[in-house]
Image (cartoon, rainbow, N blue to C red; front, side, top):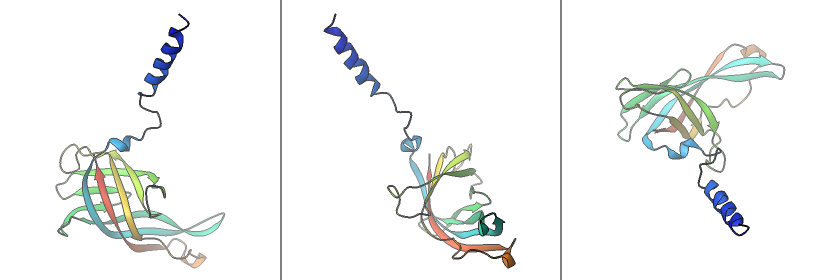
Length: 162
């Protein structure tokens, strides 16, 4: 019996390593289905808090094009992606991509809140924005700019995952 206890313990512990980790990333099981170039604008509003004046992010918008430079989708509001077939998804920032997985501080992963039931965006679960250029204010705003809006051009690659 004493000889079987270590064997049973080893088998039990070994079997545990086959179980999925609670830390696993569901994104790892996703498949990229679209990759589009975005040309757009980021919108900011001059705001004030206890640390002073700053540009508060409001939204991003733009046109997404395929490899033939045809507009296939639009980005609007607070991250609503609408395909030309009428399908759409709404998403929110899940996380900024780390330096280990991205070379650009503007790269972001979005998780889809509401996926399309049909069309090109059917079943979409994640979006990533990579190779982001532009879009950020170069200086803070001032009291004379309070409540003014600033729109800054930016470009990025959007990758859509199921």
